[in-house]
Image (cartoon, rainbow, N blue to C red; front, side, top):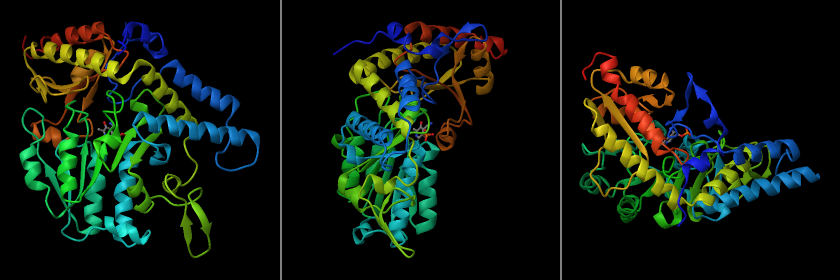
Length: 424
Ligand code: PMP
């Protein structure tokens, strides 16, 4: 197992040489979007400079080269999550991936798709189970699907320490459950959820499982087929890659039987004025012009992460995470969201409330000191409501963060309440 030297890695990330408000940048907002190493920037520039052409069509040389790079990128990114290339659908991000699944199930419910699609159809009273901790991207598409189909949306509650209530999950996931959609790692709590256990419960009822792997893919070794989920979505820009690219992994038979969501060019075999036949997956789900340079950039990001080794990434981030939470616990007036006991796996992300100071004020105070964090509800309003909050401050780290970054952040946070006259 390699160990990770964040000081050496920082040289690969040009933005980390920037000053913010006259201070060296301490970037602790990777949960929102990660920074990009030069290798990713170069891969996109190189593609746009030397190869840029439309893929899967055209007989000219550059089009053929672009197609090879695009499909090689698919293989690289699929392998990163343990899957063969044909089980990875390109999307524009996790939001699109999760909507794709919900809309495809809606299409199956409306009787569209091959006869085998009927296995995904929902009847009124069927249940879709999510959790209380979901990002809105893994909640609202299911609300919409429930509205369209008459299915009932239910949720697994969360304990005060941020772990999911698995007893409640056991009671909730029953014979009417058709879909169980949940996050691998919450973007507010940073806790790694027990995927295998939830998948086993869902499978026992014949329900489809959908994983939001947005906050796990950048931070820990991921083998989606081994986790047993049917479908999983992730976002490139959170894993050192470009914006506007993401992946949707699916089990082969599930992708085969699901009807498409978006339709149009590039996803058909034949079309008449009355009807169309579709290509097999993954192209069936890739209507329209694809984010090609971004796919090439994401493959470079994945190679960069693999060069470090995902075990080393996870170990490094756990060390930062422990230092961050340990430090925050010692600052008076700080309340951590999801402060789990030892022994529960996590990523380097901590959200907290500062007693007597609004999260936005905390964010500005830290920004003036060069420390970039996220403030607000982080697209998880129900979870904040569960903790009696409307907003929190979130610090989230990545491979390029050092112990010094964490210490600068903790030092700044320890001055917040005095500055705003909210106590020592
Ligand atoms: N799920 C989680 C857990 C997230 O953190 C995010 C991004 N904040 C998303 C889904 C949505 O990802 P994107 O906006 O890149 O589509």
